[in-house]
Length: 88
Image (cartoon, rainbow, N blue to C red; front, side):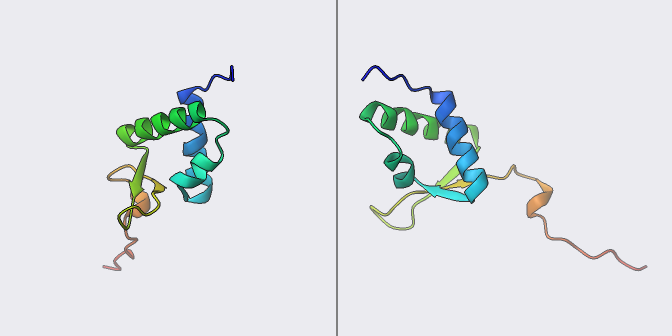
């Protein structure tokens, strides 16, 4: 049980998983962990990503699963509706 887990490594893993898949559940993240210490570091990494604004979490019902989603920067063009150019 001498394994050490790095918060930054877990942050990168969570961020890349969300970027590739669009979302991931908290349960899926925890199921990948082998020991309790890794679960704790995973949770800390998730909290840090939320604080940084990299991801957001959604829970649709009490005691339901928590979904982790990528958070787009505010004011980014990716979410802006595309308007046709006026022909004036």
